Length: 114
Length: 114
Image (cartoon, rainbow over all chains, first blue to last red):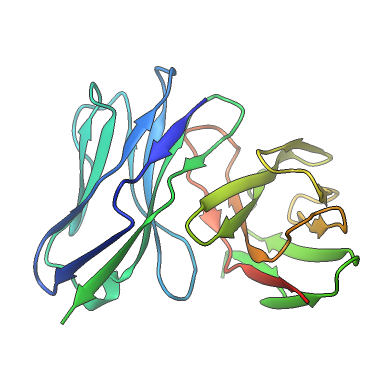
């Protein structure tokens, strides 16, 4: 069975600084995909970034990038130039061909401080 | 405007009553999902459906039921057998239910049992 672990329940960062959120996963599959979702106070889940496991190049989306370490089963999210609107819960998730299409971690609550 | 709608936003139920949560999408997606979110627990999968008239149990299906009579609709019934139904419920959809597909989420329904 897949598992996803986020070891940082809460984090904070100063506006304009950089922060990294950690995520580790465990799967026996060779083909899988990894995602970071953001849930702001409105509680609407929004996709931030995704990574295909077969791609060695780390995915980037504007100020968001990942550090994908396949051998270590690590998938961290880096947010550069943090903005107040980045304040949210961030969930790491993994999809593979097992019984559960998408498995989520328990989330990291990020607060961006002015 | 394409998207996923969930209604109602807030729902109150007396113990012993069944209640149905609505989820509708106009994205022409084949696959739909229901998740439950509790504080500190992340998202847990209740049921999912990859095609009309077919659905599979997720990790926490006990006390819940679903139907998929139309492609755009995937209602969730919380039955009186669900021992602790107070939670935030999220509906999602994806193009075809493959592991490559990104899931898109609705705004959620907050269910409170009185």
